[in-house]
Image 1 (cartoon, rainbow, N blue to C red):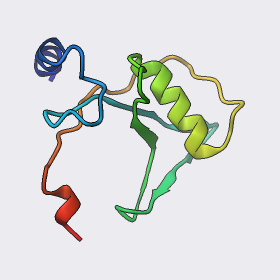
Image 2 (spheres, rainbow, N blue to C red):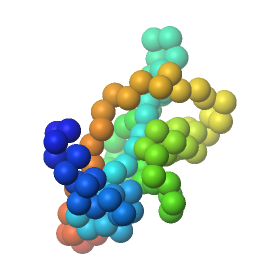
Image 3 (tube, rainbow, N blue to C red):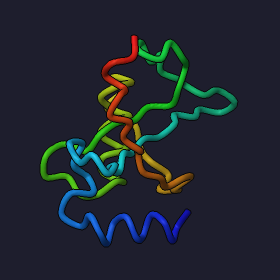
Image 4 (cartoon, rainbow, N blue to C red):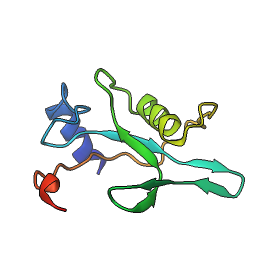
Length: 102
């Protein structure tokens, strides 16, 4: 996966964080853990409980910053601190038919 991701970033250097890039784009997210509890977010479109995350905003090119912002925005807990551990790195594959599936 690292080789594929590295190749994607090199070939899409200026647009790898752009959610309008139909080749795919890098998204970021995180999980909130407190002692033995994990805070999850109910994704309305997918009707699933997931970690927090999403797309980079215009001009963002740091997935760690994007992940922290997304977790704080979606959880509503602005006082969170990250332990700095990266659990996974991936890119979103764009399915151009997604918007047509109900």
